Length: 107
Image: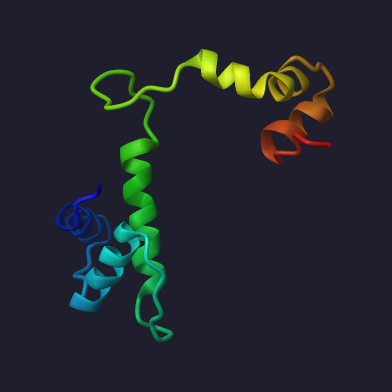
């Protein structure tokens, strides 16, 4: 589970802002997986983007030690072998571009 105070500190430091209490409540709802409504211009986009940036900071790095869980390459290959073969072992430059940048894996 994510720590609300840690996320608030991250967002405030990264964006040089101070979140309002209602914005912290939005973050708590996000952490709990709840849907919520807020009026326009209440900072929802800033809060959501800040949470995404926080998630990316935690999970977006390639770290192989100190993790709670591990998904190995054998799992990835076993579930994606057809896609990997089509995209990574195809020498057509246009096809590689589509796979890499446009994610057109399921043509």
